[in-house]
Image (cartoon, rainbow, N blue to C red; front, side):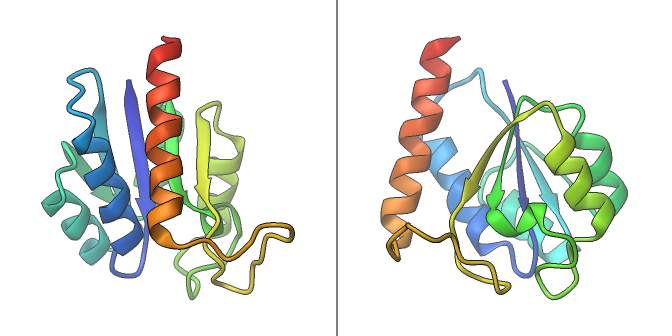
Length: 138
């Protein structure tokens, strides 16, 4: 199973997601770090991603090639993350046939109504449980 982790800025959210995926110790998972900038990609690779790529074309191309896309909610909002998510990127991610696991991080003027302000630990625990469930389905 090929899982893309998409993040920008410094890649902190992506790094935490990758660390959680690596903790599953599942050899059937291939983790691809997709950064909107080279610093985000580099940090996600240091966290254990198997391979990585940077920029609009990489994100658009790889969105078609993966089974799951993980990232903050903002990756499907054009011009979010201080403009790092281009309209092409957000459209490619949103239109991808991959399953999207979006983390409800309230940034970029996007708030998900009805969700309490969850701590990162709870969000990443939910992500880990969801990935385990998906792996069990296969």
